[in-house]
Each structure stands twice: as C-alpha cells, then as structure tokens.
Image (tube, rainbow, N blue to C red; front, top):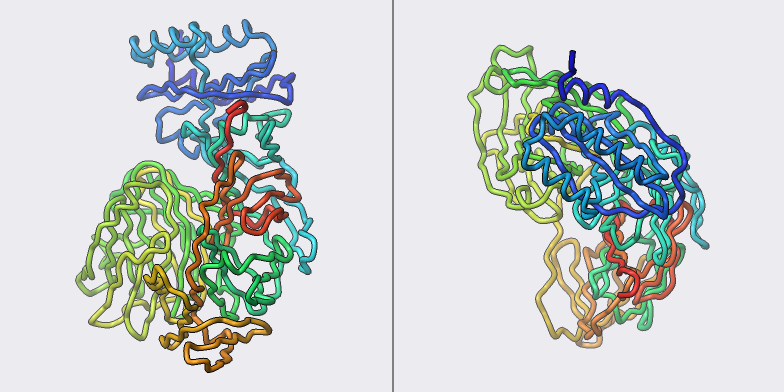
Length: 579
C-alpha cells in the first residue's frame, strides 16, 4: 500500500539525519518550489566538493511558518549522490505538484541553473547550541556585565529575500560570513555579498551608570547614546558601555537630546514564559493555538492569547516590536484586570471582568475600543496605517495618560493617532493582553513598559541656513545663540546680544546645532548600518565582527570597537569581489 504524499512528508519530517563531512567553506544561491498541499525546500550549498540539503516539510504552507523541528540538513561530498537524493525527494511529492511546474523544476535543476532554497519558513528552532555572548567590553568602559543564560537566536536575511535562523559566528568582509545552525555539524560560511542583513536575538546588556545621558545625532543621520562628558567648540565626547569613549568632531553634530535620569522600566522582556497567562481564544475562531516562547520573543501561528499584569502606571509608555507573515490582525488589551481573552461579541456572557481598552491593529487600519462588560461597545475612531501593508515589522509605542483620558499610537517613531475618551477612562486594571487572531504568523518581542513624562518628541525647526545654535527647553521656551560648552551637566550659551546663560541639562529638551555644510559621505565597499537596541543607528565600514567585538571605521570619528550585544539589527551592502 502506497503512502500519500502528505504521509511521506510527515515521515520525512520526522527523520533526523545529519550526514557528516561538510567542509567549513560553503557558498549559496537560492530558488524555491512549493505546492498548495506540501512545502518542499532544499538547499544546494556548494564548496569545492560539498553539497547540503535543508528540507522543510509541512502539510500546509501556514504550518511551515514558525513550525518547530521542520528543518533537517543532509550533507553530501559527491554531486551524483546529492542529485540522486534530490530527485528521490522530489519524486516522493511529485503527485502533489502541478505537472508543468514539476517539469520546470527538473529542467532547471538538471540544466545546472537551479540552486535550491534554504529559506527556513519554520520559526524558532531548538536551542542553537552556539557560544554565549562574550563578556568582553571595549577599552575604557567601566561596567558590570549581566550573566548570559541562553544562546541567542539570530536571523540572517539574504539579498533575494530568503531567511535562515541560527547564530552569527563572525564576519570577515573580504572572505566570508560564518553562521551556526543547530542541524549543521560545522560552521556554515556564506559569501558576504549574498547577505542583506541580520536580526539579532536577545542578548543581555551590561549595567551602565547613567550620568548626563544624551542621544547625539550626526549630520549623516547616525545617532547613538552615551554619557556626555564634554562638548566644546571642537569636539563632543561621549562615554558609552558599548564603545568606550567616542570623540566626535562638533562640526558633524546635528542634534543633542538629553535623556533625563528616569526610573528603570517597570517591565522589560519577555525573558521567559513564567508569570504569563496563556489563554485559549474562543468566540468561534477556528484553529485556536497558543503563543510559544523562544530566545526573548513570543511566536504564534494560530489564534492565541497571552497576558500579564505589568503594573501599568497612570501615565505610561508601552513599547514593543511586532513582525508578521501574512495578514496582521492583533488586539492589545490595555489596562485590563482580566488575563484571559474576551470575546467582544459575547462579552456579557463572559466571566466577570473589569473594563479595558482594545487596541486593534490590522494590515490596513487601527482602532481603539473602550470595553466594559455591560456597556455597548464604543468606537473611538479608526484610521489607516499604510506602514502595516507595506512592511512586515514595526516598532509600536503606545502612550497613555489616564487623567487626560488620552491614548496615543506611534508606529516606527511617527505619530499615527491620538484618541480621547470623552466619557471616562474605562481601564480598571494594570495588565496587558496580546491576542493574535490567527491571520498569519506573528512575533512579539522587546516589550518595555515605563513611566512616561507626558511629553512628545518635537520636530526639528526648518532653518536651512541657521547660523546659531537653538535650544528647546522642556517648558517649551526656545533660546538661540552659540553653545560655548557642555560639561558636568551644565550648558553654557552666549546669546545673540552677548549675554551668557548657564542652563542645567535636565531643563533642556534638545539642542539643534548651527547648520554646517557637510560633504557627502561615501562609506565605500563593506558598508554596514547597525541599529542599536535602544534606538539610533551607526554606519561604518566593517573590518571584523566576532562574538567578542565589532571593529569598523566611521567616517566622522574614525576606527572604533563596539560590543556586539549593543545591536538589534544590521543592514549590509558588501560588494562582490572584483567589483
């Protein structure tokens, strides 16, 4: 009795074959073939005499997304063995493939034009088994390092759109990008020019004493944070935990934003599934599932609810990152006292719960609904968000002021909408609940809850030829003149009339430096744009990336060494050899 294609796919998925012999140097290109019923993916990674197959099987495309234990790797040193194995695997599911597409698949493969796909549509693999993040710090940084408990999970993004999970082992821009995968016996090496970027999994950051912390933005849009030690007519000096002392020519400084000493976040995570309530979504939604935790993030592919009492303050900033495949449809309950999901259609018959606000995000719109168990639903207003349909990830920042009954949504730093509940503030609790409606796969991470000072970031003034520095104070006043110095938390300004004013940094919202023409910067081949976990970016020409340090050259302040745990993501634009 013959087994069906799906049965065979499940059988193959259960296999755990890893054939040894993979050499350390591997090269990769990509293409993909799939059907409506069975997803079949291969990788042909060739280096001199080695070939590797990475297979993802699932009954449906959706089940392949973020599924566990779907990726198996086989390595062959003989091309004929590799080719025969591929043809056998293709034959196993040929009955499930459209005949014309299958013929095209074989034609491309046998003609030598097909180099098969390593896209891991599956989500979090099992423990990657990579080395822990290094405790090494740049010279001059006086910090205490938090302990590292688990290996991170990184994501490599290829230039053609393919992705692969694992852990970055290192980068030598002229030779290779080294990658570790839990199913590979050795480090895999990729051609650097084939990679577009890397997203880094959770890595604990060191403890750092904040004193006169400021964010500095340069004329080329780079921005980074550190303790402001000194600023004079020639230079600005920052003390950082991730790069020691950074000395920047004042001529390239565009903006200085003091970051007042705020209390630590009320909640920051997730760092595990403990203290979270996993609820089952009801109300007629099919295929209910649950969130899964892995490496500092929650993942869901089916309808699922997760909640926690995060002790939301009365004036709060609620930040988190979302990434999704397929349609985005997630509801966030704000200020809830009930940690199980609530069906809005049948809320009157739900177990007793207090009021909350339902912030609903979809691929095209956002909406805010005050919800109580007995009152009719009220819709405070819907607005479109083109970002959600044009991208597959976003940073969400929700600002709430209970006394003013306002809820403000910001997406990727841009104001989307502010709602005002003209009736009353209905939130009765201090918890958060995230409900995924099952319209695709979703990732939730970098949740941060903190007390908000009630102020929004202002747009910079539009003065293209300004010859003076401009201070914007936290009370809204503006003062122009020349910043003579900043030191020991005090700013010295000479006004236009010659009067000298001293202002403490805690009174300053931001300082716009006088406009200076900066020549166009060409970072050249090997350019990396790295995004810091706490916001901001830095662009540099990469020299070396290891688990202990990142060495590069910035056009504004020269050669610099970073601690790799400072970064959340990096975008790469390496040139191919000979170009």
